[in-house]
Length: 383
Image (cartoon, rainbow, N blue to C red; front, top):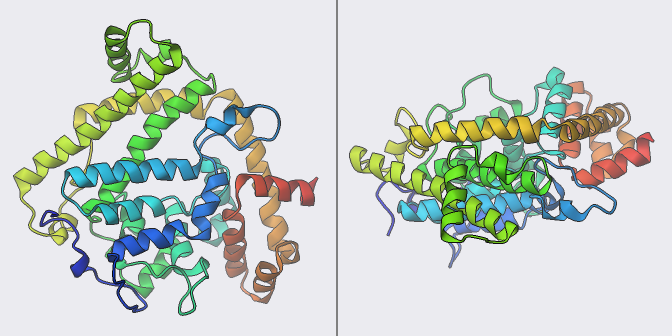
C-alpha cells in the first residue's frame, strides 16, 4: 500500500499516444521495461562517467563505473528510498533508469564540449536530450516515434532536479509544447527520489573509482567528514581486515549514512506537512526529498575533495583535452559533410535546409555515440 502522496497508477495522466492498458503491468512498470529495452539504454554500457574507455593492457578500467552500471545503482537506491517512504517504487525506478539516457560520450567532458559546439544552435543539455530520445529518436514501434512513456515519467526526466525556468533548452521546449509538463512546479516525490539517488550513487562510487585509479589514498579520505568515522568504525570492529575488504566496508557505511539520512529527513517532513496527494508534493515551495543540512555540508566537503583530486587530476585533465578535441573534430566534419554519417543520418541531414536543424541532427548522432565508437570514427575520419 502506497501513501496518499505517492503517484497512483490509476491516476496517471496516461500517454501522448493512447494505448491499451497492459493486463499484468502497471503504467510505470511498462515504462521501465521500454527504457531497459531501448537502444539508448544499451549504449550506456560503453559511455563513461569520469574515466574514458581505453584500449591497451590496463584492465583497471574494467572496474570503473560506466553510465550503465551507474544507472543500475541509481535505480537500486531509488527503489530502496521510495519503498521506505511508501512511494511508488516503479515510477521512481523508471525515472532513475531514464535519467542519464541523454548523456553523450566521454561523460561530463563530452557534455561540455557539445554544449560549446552547439552554442550557436540552441545549446545542449543532457536532461533535455534524454527527453528527445524517449519522445523522438527511439524508433521501434509501429504507431509512434519514441517510447510513448507516461506523463509522470516524462515529467520526472524533465524536472527531477527541480522546476525548470526559461529559457528552456530547445529539446525540452519541443516536448513541453507538445505536452505540458508543468515545468514551473516540483516533480513528483518519486522523481525527487531518483535525483537524490543519483547524488548518493555517484558520491559513493566516485570514491571507489578514485581509489582504484590511485588518485588518492584511504588515509587521505580519512580526513574527510563521514568517511573518517566510517573507517574508524571498521577498524574497531574488524582490526587487521585486508585492505580491499576494509575499503569496501568503510565506503558501504558512507553509502548507508546517505541513504538513511534522506529517508529520515523525508519521513520527518512528510509527517509534519501531511500532504494528501501527489499534486500537493508538486505544489510545495521546495523539494520534500533531500539531505539534512549537516550531511549536505559534509557532502559538499567530499565533493570539493573529489573535484580537486579526481575530476581535475592531471591525468584526467589531459584525457579531457584529448576527448574534447575528438568531438571538436567530429562535429564540424559531420555538419559540413553529412555523407560521412551512416546513410539514414546523412540523408536526413542533407535534406534539411536550415543550418540549426542540421546541427541538431548531427548532435543527435554524435551524442548517441559510445566512447569507443567516437574514438574509432575519429581515427577513421580524422587521423
